[in-house]
Length: 155
Image (tube, rainbow, N blue to C red; front, side, top):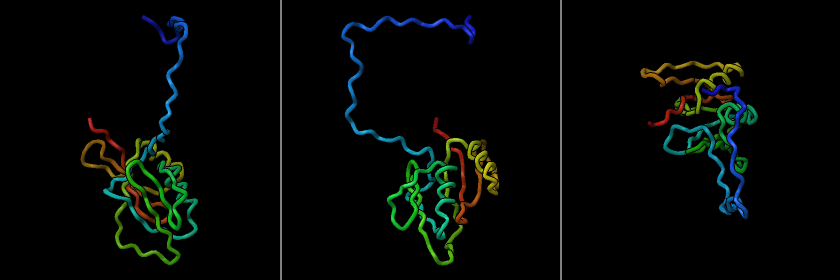
């Protein structure tokens, strides 16, 4: 029986003469997708007021781990694994047609809740009927409702 403090190591045989490492991969690099997903069937569009871009970046990029698309023109674009969140900037007072939440799936609901608590953002924890179906309901800096749930893999 070995202990975790045992310093014995497995010795490897020396490499054969003339051994070269694996060949260089010439295919273009494909970046890993963001760790966050939108629960939607297409890109999600929401309305935001002017002059809160930094607060929205902190919320969506730092807190929820979206990736910001800087080449987006007159709107803010945040990329998730599957779709994009398109935030249209309006100078006039915002009137919303509905109050549907932006549904976001994160890798760990516990980590997301810890970040929300650390930032002192007001939220409500929604307990689901089945185990593991909890969600956090909160508002982004623009006042849009956001529902955060944990992604569950299919086994």
